[in-house]
Image 1 (tube, rainbow, N blue to C red):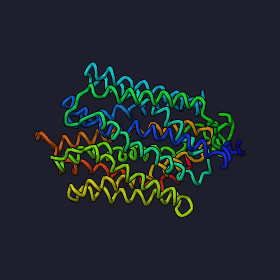
Image 2 (image 1 turned 30 degrees about the vertical axis):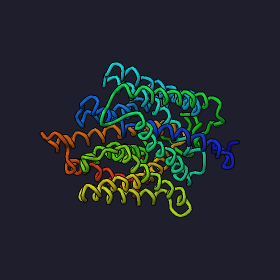
Image 3 (image 1 turned 60 degrees about the horizontal axis):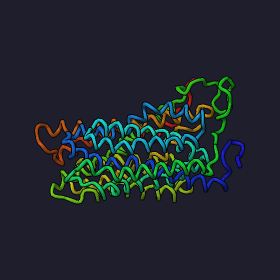
Image 4 (image 1 turned 180 degrees about the horizontal axis):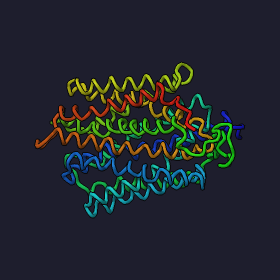
Length: 417
């Protein structure tokens, strides 16, 4: 049943939200495995820090290349079929890990990760606007928080799952075969499930209006570039994805610099997701009843700034926990930016969603820049020190400042004719 805005009625969207929660879990798993793959492949191929961060680069570069095609695909076949296609593309990427290991080829690994990233792009482009549209606008951030709990639980479980099969200290490429066969089988099964899943199509208000018709929602605007609040949202989301990914991707290497003798490194991968999940639970309880999504964005961007400074200036042993604080800070930024940026786009909603998905490439670029900075500060030394990492972590501060600006005033800029 749909109401006059094209949304599924409130009492009927519980089952679709539960199904989409499973999809967010898959997205999180696909990203979370990089936390263990980076140090594993670094040891297996004797990579520099910069080269190792090409792992996240391969995953996230797919978002900028295939973000626009993902929007076109959704327009053509709808949200549900796009999700189905996404699972099979991701499965193809995961099964390619097996020949990558057989050939002992790092570029082949990057290709497999890139193809998996394409599937992730299609999935992100479909599920995020779907969750925003399917229920009341004012509780969109709360629903995104629920999805975030599923997503970040998989960020934690992904490295733990791989840790059963992969030994970072004794990296053997042949060890990747079994876990990625298992992951491939799960993704194919989920793709089949999606074919039969009771997931209704939805539309944003005004989304079905013809391109040549003046809209009560978008006026006489003819281009997506005429929505400043969206464009600034893309920038804020680009920076956010970078600073969200970086703690997860770098915490194992940072712990190695703080405690060189530590052997159970995979256990630290749960710190950042735990911080994120605590924040998401806070968001579910507080938004919108006690806290608007705009105020949540202001507060949590500010926490990000404070946590970054604690990470940079505090001792390394405290810095590990500051990365968890940044996880907490990051929790409500994505759920708050997305509904603010996609609001009132009408017939441009799918195009706007694809632009926001393209911004996820920040998860490739910012960690890669961080890796370059670590190698720069390390100089000729063989191993990066805690101080080298802390110097590179300055990259967090300007990113959170831009996000704070968007929270305070950037999302309000709505006039550009």
